[in-house]
Image (cartoon, rainbow, N blue to C red):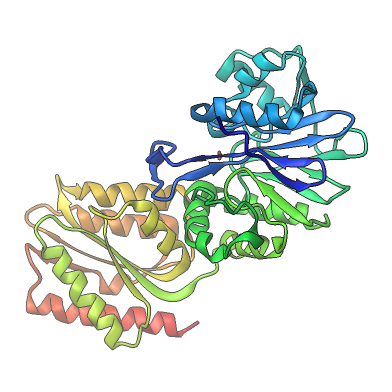
Length: 400
Ligand code: FEO
């Protein structure tokens, strides 16, 4: 039994749960430090639950909810986001509190029906700017469409100036005792906040910026997301980080991501990495796409201006681990990079050609004159070409 709940402010409680068992978020993104599914309860003349948790933790979650309500009925369940890591306990919540009214927007109503077979007889539909009176507190709703699902929305509580922000401002990482930003050093979550943003929200960075602009008019004292820390002392820190990330601000480093079967492409990467440093680039990072999960690589690609993609050919195309990486680079709309391309082939090619295509179709600043493609393994001439590529990349980075 775990009925541990934490007061956020008077009559507002944190009842989230940690998930330290799941290996992959969305069955795809590694969770070495777990993840938290946050949920909150407001006690007023009416009671309101702000989102639920993944079905894996329903029992623990309902025990916590029960312990906050202390025999009171649940009047409202506000559904900010329908992804099952937050909606997974809705059906069980309704079963326990059959009078509860679900509060969300039209798109969520449809998803409730199709995910869970929940009809609309107890549904309160809200639109942009609508308000819900709870007694001494009022919730106001703002749609944050496509950050990162079409039904995504946030709510603002004006008495204590609380923003219930759903996935926005979230992070990977379970909460190790500390729920609030002032109970730990938030640096601990920085890398996982960035990896979460780039891979989960990044595709919708433009919409995220729009949502942040819209919320900019609100006085926000605390941010209560559905993952990661609750920001009650310095919400500006996470807001600024999101603004920086969403605008794809870049530093002058170079990421080299490669796919290599027998080491010949890797050898080219090793040489190029050394040459880049000799040309004055201070921040060089090398990633083997066969070994490092792509979410860690895309995080660094998002943050850095220089990008070298390197691949051997495989079945006349890209080496599959590189193709997988490119899928996310394309899909997550990463922009603003200077791209260098290198690789190897043995007979028909295909690796380098596909990397060039990516650069062209995404409008990256492709260092076209300095593409290096070696037959089987790098020759002395190829090595000299790598030197030229390093010079060209370093020169581009100095232009900033
Ligand atoms: Fe945390 Fe989009 O769900």
